[in-house]
Length: 280
Image (cartoon, rainbow, N blue to C red):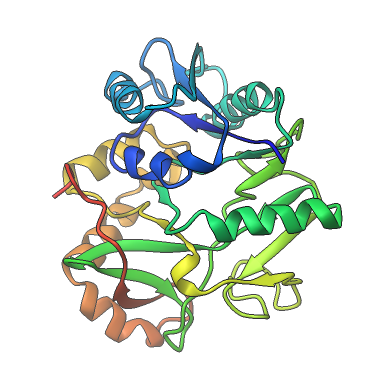
């Protein structure tokens, strides 16, 4: 099974750790970036910093750097998101059986469970692998984070889209694709509140093997910038979203303690590896 990957070079915060977490198991990595250094919303992004990081860690010359024009201001940001991903996926599909599509703030603790799930999906005729992610919202202390959970404080998975798809897949929206999914979860039943309780689970991995998603773990300055360049900027630009992030970041233990009182959006304080060089 020949495995490739694509990377959207825009956010340097966890880029090195993300790519290094799967670098050894892929044969080729397509690095897609905007030639003008612009985001999907037209704001400047640190593309050159990302490229420098990737060149430094690409010790086996696996990376193929491909510029493009993705700040199409006559399109919605999420349309540009999907367009850039599809462009990168098409290039990464050349000579591949499967393509990884991890975002640059997603880190694999171990690549082996995901590769095993891809092999199972290959054998069972599925078109993509839905693999669980741990969604982190704030750093509480060294190796300790505020994490999305169930109402009872148990680990909850998140599935922003299949983390691996067969080569030649057509994306519907961002990473999502209308293909039969091989679903991996943290328990034998669905743990994601955004999926129905009856969602099929084909395979189970331990909480320690789930992807670590550092999406909301940022300094204030970096988070403000991310809110501006994200494809979700229409939502993130609302003052209440920023204010909620500030409250969680400043009072993570209180957020976890009062979490069961809410009707949704539950959190717990837990441990995860630190990958915060340059952020704290």
